[in-house]
Every structure is written in C-alpha cells, then in structure tokens.
Image 1 (cartoon, helix red, strand yellow):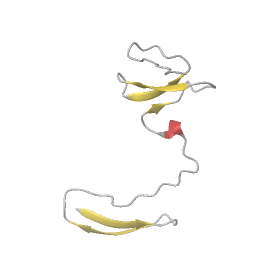
Image 2 (tube, helix red, strand yellow; image 1 turned 180 degrees about the vertical axis):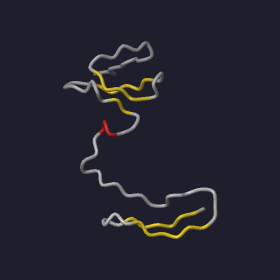
Image 3 (cartoon, helix red, strand yellow; image 1 turned 135 degrees about the horizontal axis):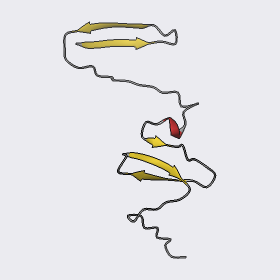
Amino acid sequence: MSIKAKVRSTGKLKGKAHSQQEIVATTMKIQAGGLRLGDLADVDSTLQADGSMMIYDEASGTYKITTQIENENLFIIGGTY
C-alpha cells in the first residue's frame, strides 16, 4: 500500500492509499530550532559536562559524551607546529 499525504500545521493528515507493500517518504522537513545533540537516538549525552568530548562506542553502537577517554584504539596526533 502506498500513501500520499500532506501534514499541515493543523496536525491533520490527508492522503490517498494504493495497494503496495511499502511506504516511502519523499520529502521531510525538520525545524531544528530546539534540536539538541542528545536528542539523536545514537548519542548518549548523560555525562555531558564542560570540556567534554564525543567518542564512538562500538559495543553499544552509540556516541558517548565524556570528559575521559580510555580507548586503546584512539591515537591523537598533534601535527607539526
């Protein structure tokens, strides 16, 4: 079933349905005024503090925000000055 729809600020949904097996969104707009990094599904910002860094945690499949990074796979190369 396919659905063609328009969502307006009134919150009402208008559309037409046809017999198919999938729903495909062709256009999506997001107002990012109140969007925060911690709102993303794969970001854990519970330990967010001043001076924090973000690192990917493969075990949980999320990005974690922390003030201490203990990871044997991380190499920080400062370059030449």
